[in-house]
Length: 360
Image (cartoon, one colour):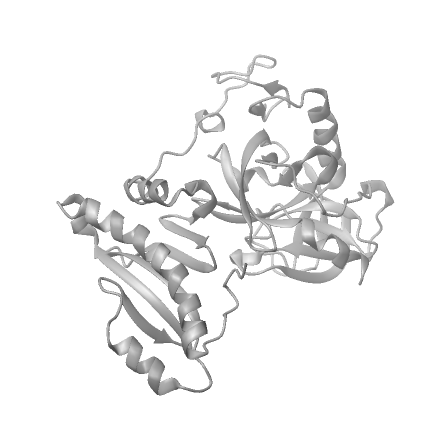
């Protein structure tokens, strides 16, 4: 196992109602480091580990000036490797590096390259420039050297240039972590974008330098009307809706072994769907007969690209009608039924687990 592979378990996907990014876990402080712009507008987000477990995390510190945020998971995570840092002054051009993360929200990816410039000035800030591929979704993830040391934090804010990626030197993160040790019980701290002074309550102007502060630094983004409707369903499922958010009006979570998704389709329908299992290699006639018998009304079974799905849809106009409560009840029921059906299909017809199942 390479040194880079050893730290892969501490690389997490960061999910919010606006999209996703990447972060990495600091074991001794129980903190996750990511970009500020990944969690902007939220005080609670989801961290998705590579074993498919998802936890909520509180946003503890945001620093818009250097685009860094510190998150505190709802519980201390054990059995994960410790990370090591390599300061900026030790880097050289043409050093080999790897970018670790979840580009475009896809599964974990490693891209390799070299350092093109150890100190590239952009908007008054020095960044590490690399030719390793960096895409939206990589934001907040680590750039590491061949020894597995973290040398920087990826940012994909600069998207105009091809074949160039940029990372904030890890020195800035080390300073934020040291500052956090001095006051580890803060609920939410905003670093002034002008003077970097730590602010602990909403204000129009920085108490230190007087600079005007944007309201969104302290306020959370309001929920959409759809989010209010769907997230009431999670109360019945006893799931924290934060851990299910995957983007605008899109939710994804596991109910037992089944992966369940809720999403809006073509601004017309609210869909609930779950990929249950792969088609078996034999007994296909029996499986088709079962599926066509419509055994799970009001839900439907179907097949796409070799996977058996259970699905349900409601027209958006019905969400404001007398059907509102029934639709919410059916959304919750689909998740429960999906967790039953995947086992049934595997045990009865010899279907196979698929890659997105969370086998207990």
